[in-house]
Length: 468
Image 1 (tube, rainbow, N blue to C red):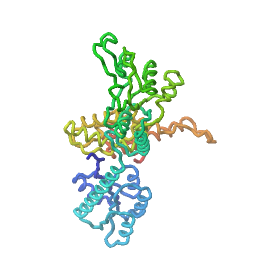
Image 2 (cartoon, rainbow, N blue to C red):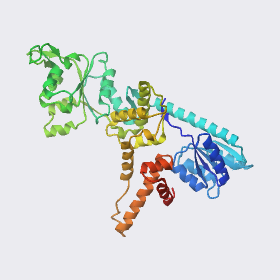
Image 3 (cartoon, rainbow, N blue to C red):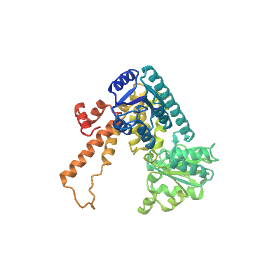
Image 4 (cartoon, one colour):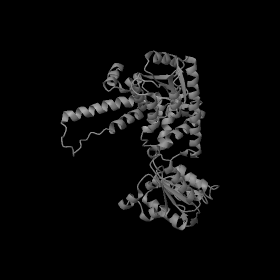
């Protein structure tokens, strides 16, 4: 089972430097990723900026009381497991902390082994919660081959597809390239009464016009040069089954009229024959083009369009159902593990964030290819940022840049001068860019500097400039 990586990361919030240093050294030796904050404000700032699994929180901080931090964690719904550290005898504060969902408490002075036992219990609790969440997601997940979804839009679409599968109505599926139009068509066939009969796919883009009619309707022996034998067409082969006309918007106009005849009269002729043959097929067509617009432009027959568009089905693009991305990644990785003999078991949070930010213009087909690249280039059992392509990383940076507001408020009475506004925009960009990199790389400064193509010291100056 491929899962999001559990970083085993810990934040220590304590105003005593000796405790922070002692705990950090000990926990890092045990393989934990450790972050430190010397006061409540910095601790709270880190909790809102980066993901950590466990926070070791001293209740008696100099600036903000630890109880107030627990309240903020609840208010902001920050997904972290708090373990509170309290002075010996301060049981009342510990009880109040437990009421605010603290996992456990430890009293000072404490032994390193005692605190490690509590931390291990916390991570077991996190693992159990993650497993429960995974089971809930699987219960809520629909799967038909590579058609995997948790999206309400997709479930509504599939509900309609299943409903019309019980009829013989012609269906027109619309969706961008790579959204899974053939899978949806196959799903309709499998749910129909024709499911034990042929399912024939005809790709209207792959055959030259002079061969397409022969492929669709067949030809008699001697019908043209090279026709040395009788050939049955795909509409004949698919009799009593389903014909899937993929990318029907690419069909030449001369064949559009012949397809219309099949839909209207259920008859066709082989090339070179005067005899009409009967066919009993269910037609499902698909396109990534706007057929209504093509009708207006005169490039697609209006009568064929209305015949096809009896039941229109729209497949949403992957960028509109991002909740499906990680379940699809999980499925693709599991299949590729078997195919290439690997045992990849997790995807890091940073890598998952980039996959979720990317807009996927090629939809599921592109995602599948990207996952294959990640699996092949991965050297261990863990997909991280190194396996993410530079194109996806660059796209995330552009997306971040596109979110900036470069405008001035026209209603503002005092219009800022050019240099002032320019300085403000540059500062906003620098801060957001650095913060975005820090989040992506879980505050690994060396990796941030490499991604930004800056010296480590230059990136650290940027962090100090904006108190990051």
